Every structure is written in structure tokens, then in C-alpha cells.
Image (tube, rainbow, N blue to C red; front, side, top):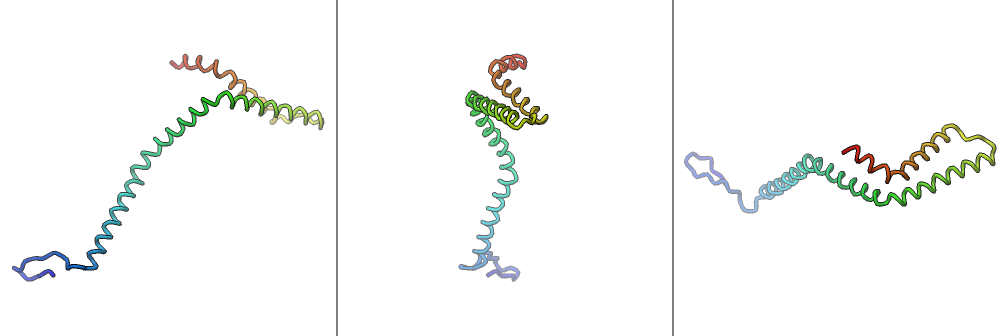
Length: 130
């Protein structure tokens, strides 16, 4: 107990087993934990996320670079199958190919040709950049 009498010694220690002491201790632990989590969410995560995203995208790009040949081969099969299906459908039904379909298939063929030539084009482009 504390004494409010002038000249009496001030005893600020709580009584043993005081329930308020336990509540204050638990409250301070919860508040400190909340502050740590709030700081992590506010400051650490926004700084760490771009680093993680760049690392992951670099790994994905490296995988695609190694898989260039079989992905290009698969694309070649898909484009050839699409042209074949369009030709079969056109001759069977007698309807001409729609202009939008022809444009998209031509664009796909151009992109495939660029992918096939890319191993020869890339060194030239890299020399131009340097």
C-alpha cells in the first residue's frame, strides 16, 4: 500500500498476487507484439516484397531461357495444327477464313518465326545495345 501522508515513505510496489499486475503484464506483452507486427507490416514487408518478386521472376525467366527449344517446338506444332484445322474447315464448309482470324494467325506465324530466329537475332541485338 502507498501512503499519501507527507513525510511518510513512498512504497510503490504492488501487493503480492495483485490481479492488476498480471493484467498490466499481459497487456504490455500484447501491445509490444502488436507493435512489432505493425512495424513488420508497415516497414519490412513493402521493402522485402519487391526483392522477393524480382528473385522469383529471375528464376522463372531463367527456366524459360533453358526451355526455349522445347517451348518453340511446341508452339510450332500448335501453329501448324491451327493452320491445318483452318484449311480443313475452310475446304469442308466452303466459307472463307474471317479477316480477324487471318490477321491473328498471321501474327502468330510471325511471332513463331521470330522465336525460331531468336538465337541468331539476340547476339546482334546485344551488340547494338553495348
